Length: 610
Image (tube, rainbow, N blue to C red; front, side):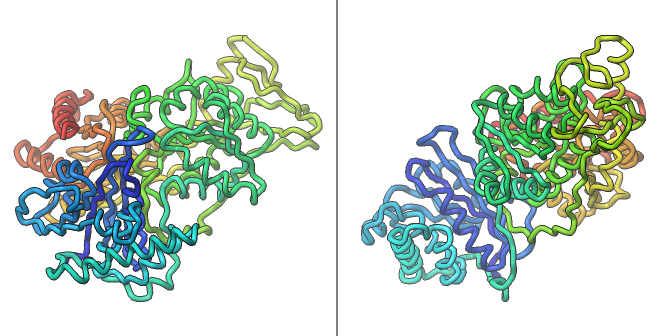
C-alpha cells in the first residue's frame, strides 16, 4: 500500500532561484487538498549564492516534526545529490535534473530523471524549472491538477504574463511524468473529501506572532531589520495602517527599544522584535524598563551565535541573557511559545503580563519556529482576554505617586494628559513620586517592589495556559522542556510508549519566573528527568538544577538544526536501558549532575558534526 506520510526535501543553489518556492508551493497544494503540512528550511546568510534547503512533511493527520529520513529528494544540482541522497530511505524517491546532475547508485531508491533545462527551453522559460518540478510532483503523488493550478494562481499570479508562463510550466512538468514515467510512485497523497470547503490557515510562526500582537491590542512597533525577525515588522507594516497603528524602522536596535518604551509611556501597547545580536544591544534599556516600570514586549527570534554567528540557523542559546542580562538585578518576565499556533496565544499572554505587572517581557521564539509554515485551524478568538494596566484615578484626592509602595508591588500608572499625573520615567533610583532618591532605605524598598511583582507572575502560568502536559504522568522517566523542541519530543514519546517505555512530559511556556510549585510537583518521584534544548551548555537544565537542586540529564543539540524525532527517542531508550541495569538513575543527594551532562555533551558534539 502506498505511504501517505511524506517527508520531502528540496535542495539547490540560491543563485538559481525558486528552491524555497518549489517547496512552499507544493506544500500549499497539499494543504489545499486537506493534508497537514509542516515545513522547515535553511538558507545561506549571503545575499547571493549558497546552498538552500527546504523540507516539508505532509500527512493526512497532524504532524509534529520535520521527520527523520527522507521519502523524497528533489535535487536541482549535484551538490544536493551529494549532500542528501544518503538520507533517502529505501523505497524512497530521487527526482533530479538529468541535464546537470548524475545520481548515485540506486540502492533501493526510485530515481526519476527530469530534463529540466530541456523542458524549460521548450517553453522558452528558463526561470520556470521549479514550477515544472512542481507539476511533476503533483502528477507523481496523485494530487489534483486543478488544486495545483489554483495555488499557483494565488501564489504567483500578481503579473498576468508571468502567471501564464507559470501555468504552462506547471502543465509541462505534469505532462512529462504522465507521458514518460510508467512506474508507480511508492507514495500517494490522497486529498481529503470536502477540504476545499474548510477554513484553515497556512502560516509561519512569525505571521502567527504578528497576528497575535494585533489581537493583543499592540498598536506601536519599532524595530530594526535582522534575520530572522524582520518578517514580523513587514507583516505589521502591512496591517497597522488600517488599524490605526504605527510601525517605525529605527536606525538601530537601541533606538527601536527606546521608541517602544516611549510608546508604552503614552499608554499604547508597544513591541519590538530582534534576534541575539540586537538583544545584546537592548540590554541597558531593558534594565531601564525594569527601573521605570514600563510595560513592553521584546521579541527575540533566537539564532545560532555568538556574535553574528549563523543568522539562518536555529538555536535556543539566548535563555540566559533573556533572564539575567542586565547590570545588577533587573527582574523581567520571559515567555517562550512551543509551536506556530502557540505564537499567537503566547504573545497575547506576553502583552497581558507586561501590562499587569508593568515590566518588560522577553518573548523567546527561534529561527526554526519563525520561518516554519504549518497548517492550523483558525484561531479561537474566544480565548483572547486582554488584561488592562492599572491606571491612576484622576479623581483620587491623594497626590499621584507613580511608584507608590503597595503589597503587590504594582502601583497605578498615569498617561500623558491626566491632570496631576505627570512623572519622569527615568533610569535613576527614585522616590515614590518619581524624584531621584539615593537612600539605602528607598533603594531596598524599590528592589523589593520590582522583584515581588515579577515573582508573583508565576502564579499566572497555569491559569493562562502556559503549562502543557502529555504522555503518561505516572511514568518514572520524564521530559521537562521549553520552546520548539516539543514537536520531536511528542513524536518520540508516542513511539517510546508504543514500545512499552512510558514517559511523562511537561513544557513550561513561562521561563522566568519559573512556575516553581508546578515544576516541583512534576519532577517529584521521577527516576530520570531529560531536558532537551538547542544550546551548548544546557541553559534550562542548569536553571532547573540550580532552582530545585535536582539532578537532570541535559540533552543538547547545538549544530544549528532542529532536533529530529530519533534524537529524542534514542535518549529515552538509553535512559530506560540504564534504569534496567541500575534500577534507579537519579539520586536523592543534593548535588548537581556531572557525569550525565558530560556524557551527553560528547553525544551532542558527535551529532553536530554530521
